[in-house]
Image (tube, helix red, strand yellow):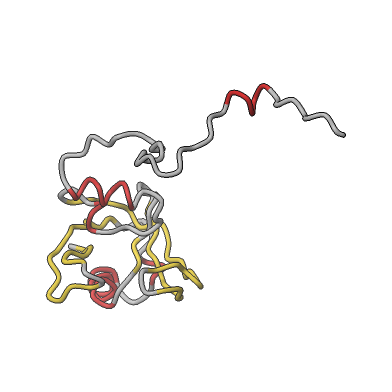
Length: 141
């Protein structure tokens, strides 16, 4: 006949969970003191490397550092290759679309080497047709 094992101090101090006592699991993190949904979106986008309209309060003036092709970039519509504009003053990059590429070409010419060091102003503009449910996009003045 074997003798029962003694419970260790760690297991002896733990209570077995009630089967269905209606208790909710303990929340991890902390309560956010946000006043509007725009601030919530900003928190959600904090780890996103791409600049979006929610990242711009009014206008944002930046200096073009370089153009970078990002193969297999994670986007809302899946993985794809994008060309992004990187800036001296901002850690997030702007994924270029045809509209913004046209503005850059008009202002600085076709040779992107001439764009480096140029200042541009970004702003959030209401889109004619929402993209992925977003009503605003980043535009270049």
